[in-house]
Length: 155
Image 1 (tube, rainbow, N blue to C red):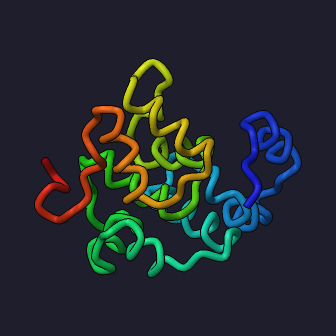
Image 2: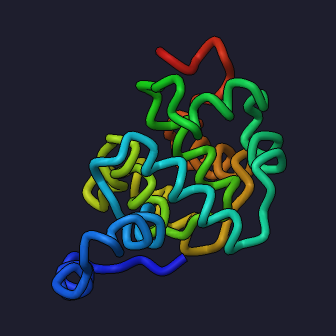
């Protein structure tokens, strides 16, 4: 997966003919903001690149495969930003990758001026990719752990 800047996409589009549009869309699907499933394509490409199975992400994030699949494929939309963060941590996302995923899903990026987000950012920088360990770190610093289970997901 190759994250492209808008300027780069603009340059590519200058050369694209209508006959080449399907190929352009396929190659750049994870960069598209207007696609309903852009989050899914982004996560799928990211996991493929990292050699991580979705099944393993769900297990690490403590989310059932059926519900996790609905969320990742955006068949069901969650209002729980923590759930997306939890899935991204389990997917070994770094700070930039997580911010992109959050943005594609419709949430605010991790924000350095938010103390809890700052704690998550530092954990990501330390390559903490275990949601349970991240929860421990959050609680050690007097923050709420990431909400994850079915009963908490929409609260």
